[in-house]
Image 1 (spheres, rainbow, N blue to C red):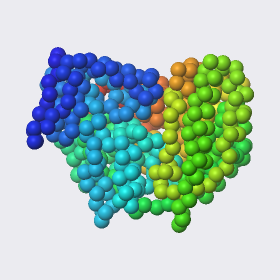
Image 2 (tube, rainbow, N blue to C red):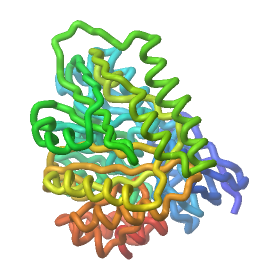
Image 3 (cartoon, rainbow, N blue to C red):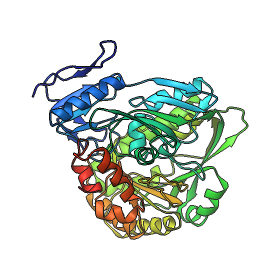
Image 4 (tube, helix red, strand yellow):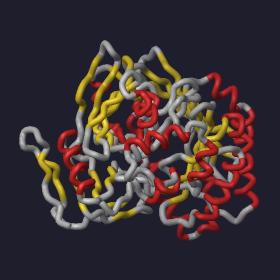
Length: 452
């Protein structure tokens, strides 16, 4: 079927399509690819709604893909793919209400830079800024925080195109049941066209990064979380070495990392040299433990103060695949020790550090932190390296502790497991059945994790 341009219904603007040419799409890690029958890049909500309506009439399933920073097939479709690059920009900034409304395809980088220019900020965020706002929210992107939660928890309203092409607006006051589910909706309820976030006056964060032994950081974990607004650490497998990061609000003054020091740590060591280490480890896995013992000591202690997005985020240029599990907070340290013992007694060769973060409980039905204080353990492997044995064994540990997999990262769980893990799972699927009974927004991944 040949795809045709779709009218936006306003001002003659159109949604770009591939005009019948099958386009191959790959995610950032390169482990997911698709060749949709039709591709559109609408620039307005009206154009998006018309594209969805026509696709449904033509019997095509519909998915939206952001920048591909998820590792699952959540965005895969053989029908119509919606690309984000023209549905961008700030649609409203209300200082009195403390909100910003932004088009769904806008990158977190653009949002953060725009907010900073206006003297505003999100309260918390993840550690990269390349994602679109809708992709990040829909898959449960989170940072680390004692009391401040994920991006989805900072959403106060959204606009969504439904399976019949209608446009639905929702918030806690309007279509509240849909809003509760759609804040983290996996693309299963509709296509988000815009999001409204809660923001606050810009503040400063002082970051203190320092090496710490595995035994010390795990024995003092609860204290470190309690004493810091944002605490996280990285453990380097095959070693007893960790690198910790404590972020706390500060009265200033601004003291950013010196340019040369920042380039050495964040670009040369964390990206350039690390890329070489991973490439060497992939070619000769037996050397990985020796390299890990050396490289884990390369980053020294440092302290700096800056605006939030410059502290929370950092460049990630070495490509990898990832699995992350959300555990009850009290289970995190025992699970981490089991993971360490797994690496020590196995023949695995792990060149990537393990990332550990926390989040407060929230009330979003499919949030990994729904209803419980949460600790996160994320395992990574260099792109192209065999990961199955490591991820399978790590997942066995995480599920034994009641873990919930990150929706955008690799895992093997299905709807039966997830329904038992999320007390409000049925609430979400009932909203889905009402909004998309014909599964216009369905795909194989959603069938596995949400059921039929």
